[in-house]
Each structure stands twice: as C-alpha cells, then as structure tokens.
Image (cartoon, rainbow, N blue to C red; front, side):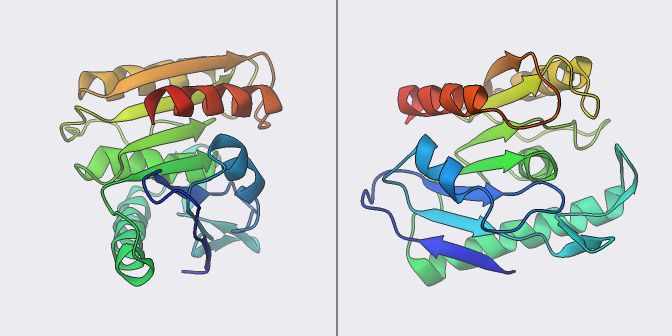
Length: 201
C-alpha cells in the first residue's frame, strides 16, 4: 500500500495510523496527526481502491451503502499491512492508534469490528457503522474518540450514536464529541481529539 512512515521522537508514544477520506492521499492527515501527538511515529496510508479516480479504502455500492465483501477483504488487507509495517519499521504493533476521517474512519472502525486487539485505540472523524448484525470482538481496554457533526448530511447523528452504542457494548470506552457543522473536519474536533489523546495516552 502507498504510505508514508515518519519516526517520532517518543518511542513509547502510540504510533498513529492515518487514514484519509474519499479522494485523499497519504499526505492529507499528517498535519492533523502532529496536532494530536507531536512526538508519535506516523504511518499514513493511501487506500487501494479507486472510485472515479479518487482513492478510497473500500468500494461502495452507492453513497452510504458499503460493498460488504470488499470491506471485509480490504479490512484484512489493511490489518496485514499494519502487521508487516510494524516488522519493517520496528514500531510496537500493540501500541497503534488509528486516526481516520470519513472513509478512513470507516475502515478503522471495521478493524475494531472484525479483529480483537487490532488497534489500541481510534480517533474516528465522521464515521459510519461499518457493518450491522455481527458479533464484535471483546474491545475491553480499547479507547475510541468519535468526532461527529449534528448537521452532517452524509453521516446523520443517529449513525454516530449507534456506533457509540455498538462499541460500548463490546467493552470499548467511547467519547462522542459533537460539532454543529456538516461532514467537514473542523479544527475544533481535532483539538478535542488531541485533548482526549493526552488524557488516554
């Protein structure tokens, strides 16, 4: 997978797995990663799927309708890439926090839904529920921050609340932060995510 790895100054800080939104690249979230944890190593990844020329992490059948088969395959692909990258770059595989926006947040949430201990924690900006009707792994000890918009046309508030309930039901600690904006990523929610990160890590 196309990616950027930047070694951080603090070996004990979680490595940040940065996952862009639709049409983004591995460059997009590096500045936001630095705002959240300036001394962390960063692994920023580009999605392997193209939709009308725009990189994504998995296919969708329509806006808001995921191709579940592809989602499962791409989630496994990303987990394997993370496993391999920890070997290649020498970071602690058990100390990885994902930072995802929109489509990137959805694949990060999918990792939590499908694989126990795949992530130590996650910052999910404007995520949706990746799958319904499945049993989640035990997420005890996993911390999740959800940044959501009350006026988000792509991800209605009920979606964020449902995701919170599902993750908490599996044992995760979840903080849901609301912004009164649409689907865009705001400086306010990044600052709140940075505060949350400092309290948890």
